[in-house]
Length: 259
Image (tube, rainbow, N blue to C red; front, side):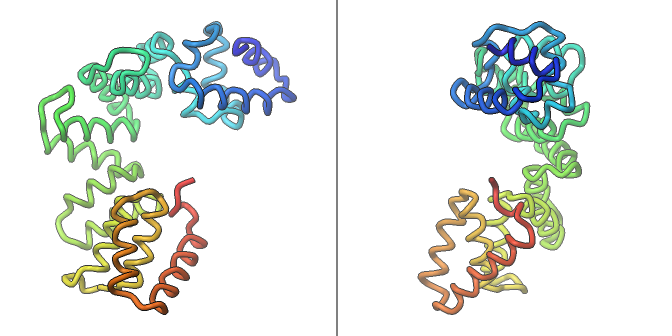
Protein backbone atom coordinates (compact mmCIF):
# COMPACT_ATOMS: atom_id res chain seq x y z
CA UNK A 1 0.00 0.00 0.00
CA UNK A 2 2.73 2.46 0.99
CA UNK A 3 4.79 1.67 -2.09
CA UNK A 4 1.76 2.27 -4.33
CA UNK A 5 1.00 5.59 -2.63
CA UNK A 6 4.61 6.75 -2.95
CA UNK A 7 4.58 5.84 -6.63
CA UNK A 8 1.45 7.94 -7.12
CA UNK A 9 3.02 10.87 -5.33
CA UNK A 10 6.23 10.57 -7.31
CA UNK A 11 4.21 10.50 -10.52
CA UNK A 12 2.48 13.70 -9.49
CA UNK A 13 -0.98 12.23 -8.95
CA UNK A 14 -2.27 15.21 -6.95
CA UNK A 15 -5.74 13.69 -6.64
CA UNK A 16 -4.25 11.05 -4.35
CA UNK A 17 -2.42 13.39 -1.98
CA UNK A 18 -5.28 14.14 0.43
CA UNK A 19 -6.19 10.46 0.66
CA UNK A 20 -2.56 9.53 1.16
CA UNK A 21 -2.05 12.13 3.89
CA UNK A 22 -5.11 10.97 5.81
CA UNK A 23 -4.26 7.29 5.45
CA UNK A 24 -0.58 7.71 6.27
CA UNK A 25 -1.11 9.81 9.41
CA UNK A 26 -3.85 7.46 10.59
CA UNK A 27 -1.51 4.50 10.14
CA UNK A 28 1.29 6.38 11.91
CA UNK A 29 -0.94 7.21 14.86
CA UNK A 30 -1.88 3.53 15.14
CA UNK A 31 1.56 2.00 14.62
CA UNK A 32 3.90 4.73 15.85
CA UNK A 33 7.56 5.02 14.94
CA UNK A 34 8.90 2.72 12.27
CA UNK A 35 5.68 2.52 10.29
CA UNK A 36 7.60 1.57 7.17
CA UNK A 37 9.06 -1.41 9.06
CA UNK A 38 5.50 -2.70 9.32
CA UNK A 39 4.73 -2.22 5.64
CA UNK A 40 6.30 -3.19 2.34
CA UNK A 41 9.53 -1.21 2.23
CA UNK A 42 9.63 1.12 -0.79
CA UNK A 43 12.71 1.34 -2.96
CA UNK A 44 15.41 3.82 -2.05
CA UNK A 45 14.58 6.38 -4.74
CA UNK A 46 10.94 6.48 -3.64
CA UNK A 47 11.99 6.82 -0.03
CA UNK A 48 14.40 9.69 -0.73
CA UNK A 49 11.76 11.44 -2.80
CA UNK A 50 9.22 11.06 -0.01
CA UNK A 51 11.62 12.43 2.62
CA UNK A 52 13.23 15.26 0.68
CA UNK A 53 10.84 16.44 -2.03
CA UNK A 54 9.49 19.80 -0.89
CA UNK A 55 6.01 19.25 -2.30
CA UNK A 56 5.51 16.34 0.10
CA UNK A 57 5.97 18.65 3.09
CA UNK A 58 2.41 19.81 2.59
CA UNK A 59 1.24 16.19 2.39
CA UNK A 60 2.90 14.60 5.42
CA UNK A 61 4.65 16.70 8.13
CA UNK A 62 8.43 16.35 8.13
CA UNK A 63 8.67 14.93 11.65
CA UNK A 64 6.22 12.18 10.77
CA UNK A 65 8.03 11.38 7.52
CA UNK A 66 11.31 10.79 9.34
CA UNK A 67 9.78 9.05 12.34
CA UNK A 68 7.94 6.65 10.04
CA UNK A 69 11.23 5.10 8.94
CA UNK A 70 12.58 1.96 10.54
CA UNK A 71 16.00 1.62 12.11
CA UNK A 72 17.68 0.16 9.03
CA UNK A 73 16.45 2.94 6.72
CA UNK A 74 17.38 5.63 9.21
CA UNK A 75 20.84 4.17 9.72
CA UNK A 76 21.50 4.24 5.98
CA UNK A 77 20.65 7.93 5.78
CA UNK A 78 22.39 8.72 9.08
CA UNK A 79 25.64 7.16 7.91
CA UNK A 80 25.40 9.28 4.77
CA UNK A 81 25.41 12.33 7.03
CA UNK A 82 21.75 13.33 7.27
CA UNK A 83 21.34 15.20 10.54
CA UNK A 84 17.61 14.49 10.57
CA UNK A 85 18.21 10.77 10.20
CA UNK A 86 20.88 10.91 12.92
CA UNK A 87 18.46 12.62 15.28
CA UNK A 88 15.58 10.21 14.66
CA UNK A 89 17.92 7.23 14.90
CA UNK A 90 19.12 8.55 18.26
CA UNK A 91 15.51 8.83 19.33
CA UNK A 92 14.90 5.18 18.41
CA UNK A 93 17.75 4.08 20.69
CA UNK A 94 16.72 6.53 23.41
CA UNK A 95 13.18 5.17 23.69
CA UNK A 96 13.79 1.61 22.50
CA UNK A 97 11.50 1.87 19.50
CA UNK A 98 12.20 -0.83 16.95
CA UNK A 99 15.48 -1.61 18.71
CA UNK A 100 16.68 -2.29 22.26
CA UNK A 101 17.01 0.83 24.38
CA UNK A 102 20.64 1.98 24.38
CA UNK A 103 21.42 5.40 25.85
CA UNK A 104 25.06 5.30 24.80
CA UNK A 105 24.10 4.63 21.18
CA UNK A 106 21.38 7.27 21.38
CA UNK A 107 23.89 9.83 22.63
CA UNK A 108 26.28 8.98 19.81
CA UNK A 109 23.68 9.77 17.15
CA UNK A 110 22.26 12.79 18.94
CA UNK A 111 25.78 14.21 19.17
CA UNK A 112 26.39 13.69 15.46
CA UNK A 113 23.18 15.56 14.64
CA UNK A 114 23.93 18.25 17.23
CA UNK A 115 27.34 18.88 15.71
CA UNK A 116 25.54 19.59 12.45
CA UNK A 117 23.31 22.17 14.12
CA UNK A 118 20.12 20.16 14.73
CA UNK A 119 18.44 22.16 17.57
CA UNK A 120 16.43 19.31 19.12
CA UNK A 121 19.52 17.09 19.04
CA UNK A 122 21.52 19.86 20.73
CA UNK A 123 18.90 20.03 23.47
CA UNK A 124 18.97 16.24 23.90
CA UNK A 125 22.77 16.26 24.16
CA UNK A 126 22.33 18.83 26.93
CA UNK A 127 19.82 16.58 28.73
CA UNK A 128 22.03 13.50 28.39
CA UNK A 129 25.02 15.37 29.84
CA UNK A 130 22.89 16.79 32.63
CA UNK A 131 21.54 13.44 33.84
CA UNK A 132 24.40 11.16 32.74
CA UNK A 133 22.65 9.07 30.08
CA UNK A 134 25.21 7.34 27.88
CA UNK A 135 27.89 9.77 29.02
CA UNK A 136 29.37 10.97 32.31
CA UNK A 137 27.42 13.75 33.99
CA UNK A 138 28.84 17.12 32.99
CA UNK A 139 26.82 20.19 33.89
CA UNK A 140 29.09 22.59 32.03
CA UNK A 141 28.79 20.52 28.87
CA UNK A 142 25.03 20.37 29.35
CA UNK A 143 24.81 24.16 29.63
CA UNK A 144 26.92 24.57 26.51
CA UNK A 145 24.52 22.49 24.45
CA UNK A 146 21.42 24.03 26.03
CA UNK A 147 22.68 27.43 24.93
CA UNK A 148 23.39 26.23 21.40
CA UNK A 149 19.81 24.95 21.19
CA UNK A 150 18.44 28.11 22.79
CA UNK A 151 20.21 30.35 20.33
CA UNK A 152 18.46 28.47 17.55
CA UNK A 153 15.09 29.10 19.17
CA UNK A 154 14.56 25.78 20.96
CA UNK A 155 12.15 26.47 23.86
CA UNK A 156 13.51 23.73 26.11
CA UNK A 157 17.02 25.08 25.65
CA UNK A 158 15.81 28.61 26.32
CA UNK A 159 14.14 27.49 29.54
CA UNK A 160 17.33 25.81 30.78
CA UNK A 161 19.49 28.81 29.87
CA UNK A 162 17.04 30.99 31.79
CA UNK A 163 17.37 28.77 34.86
CA UNK A 164 21.15 29.22 34.84
CA UNK A 165 21.33 32.87 33.78
CA UNK A 166 23.02 35.48 35.96
CA UNK A 167 20.30 37.81 37.15
CA UNK A 168 16.52 37.68 36.99
CA UNK A 169 16.26 40.02 33.99
CA UNK A 170 18.42 37.71 31.90
CA UNK A 171 16.41 34.72 33.09
CA UNK A 172 13.14 36.42 32.21
CA UNK A 173 14.42 37.22 28.74
CA UNK A 174 14.99 33.54 27.97
CA UNK A 175 11.83 32.35 29.72
CA UNK A 176 9.73 34.78 27.71
CA UNK A 177 11.30 33.54 24.48
CA UNK A 178 10.29 29.99 25.40
CA UNK A 179 6.89 30.97 26.79
CA UNK A 180 6.00 32.74 23.55
CA UNK A 181 6.39 29.35 21.83
CA UNK A 182 3.99 27.59 24.19
CA UNK A 183 6.55 26.18 26.64
CA UNK A 184 4.48 25.39 29.73
CA UNK A 185 7.33 25.26 32.27
CA UNK A 186 8.51 28.71 31.21
CA UNK A 187 4.98 30.09 31.36
CA UNK A 188 4.49 28.72 34.87
CA UNK A 189 7.86 30.11 35.93
CA UNK A 190 6.88 33.57 34.71
CA UNK A 191 3.63 33.15 36.62
CA UNK A 192 5.61 32.39 39.76
CA UNK A 193 7.81 35.45 39.21
CA UNK A 194 4.77 37.74 39.11
CA UNK A 195 3.30 36.02 42.17
CA UNK A 196 6.22 36.12 44.58
CA UNK A 197 6.75 38.84 47.14
CA UNK A 198 10.41 39.29 46.20
CA UNK A 199 9.47 40.33 42.66
CA UNK A 200 9.45 44.07 42.08
CA UNK A 201 6.82 43.36 39.42
CA UNK A 202 4.45 41.38 41.60
CA UNK A 203 1.08 41.25 39.90
CA UNK A 204 -1.32 38.51 40.89
CA UNK A 205 -3.67 39.09 37.94
CA UNK A 206 -0.77 38.73 35.50
CA UNK A 207 0.45 35.72 37.47
CA UNK A 208 -3.01 34.16 37.16
CA UNK A 209 -2.97 34.78 33.41
CA UNK A 210 0.39 33.08 32.92
CA UNK A 211 -0.54 30.15 35.16
CA UNK A 212 -3.81 29.80 33.21
CA UNK A 213 -1.98 29.63 29.90
CA UNK A 214 0.52 27.12 31.32
CA UNK A 215 -2.40 25.04 32.61
CA UNK A 216 -3.98 24.95 29.15
CA UNK A 217 -0.67 23.57 27.89
CA UNK A 218 -0.87 20.75 30.42
CA UNK A 219 1.54 22.15 33.00
CA UNK A 220 0.75 20.77 36.47
CA UNK A 221 2.08 23.82 38.34
CA UNK A 222 -0.04 26.02 36.12
CA UNK A 223 -3.16 24.06 37.04
CA UNK A 224 -2.30 24.00 40.75
CA UNK A 225 -1.41 27.65 41.23
CA UNK A 226 -4.10 29.00 38.96
CA UNK A 227 -6.62 27.45 41.34
CA UNK A 228 -4.64 28.61 44.37
CA UNK A 229 -4.77 32.21 43.19
CA UNK A 230 -8.44 31.95 42.29
CA UNK A 231 -9.40 30.52 45.69
CA UNK A 232 -6.98 32.30 48.02
CA UNK A 233 -5.72 35.56 46.55
CA UNK A 234 -8.09 36.99 43.93
CA UNK A 235 -11.62 38.30 44.10
CA UNK A 236 -14.14 37.73 41.29
CA UNK A 237 -13.20 40.95 39.51
CA UNK A 238 -9.52 39.98 39.53
CA UNK A 239 -10.31 36.54 38.13
CA UNK A 240 -12.37 38.09 35.34
CA UNK A 241 -9.54 40.50 34.63
CA UNK A 242 -7.10 37.58 34.45
CA UNK A 243 -9.35 35.65 32.09
CA UNK A 244 -9.69 38.69 29.85
CA UNK A 245 -5.93 39.12 29.88
CA UNK A 246 -5.46 35.51 28.78
CA UNK A 247 -7.73 36.13 25.79
CA UNK A 248 -5.81 39.27 24.87
CA UNK A 249 -2.45 37.53 25.17
CA UNK A 250 -3.51 34.53 23.08
CA UNK A 251 -5.14 36.75 20.45
CA UNK A 252 -1.88 38.67 20.14
CA UNK A 253 0.18 35.48 20.00
CA UNK A 254 -1.72 32.22 19.29
CA UNK A 255 1.55 30.30 19.70
CA UNK A 256 1.22 30.74 23.45
CA UNK A 257 -1.06 27.71 23.31
CA UNK A 258 0.07 24.38 21.91
CA UNK A 259 -2.11 22.77 19.26
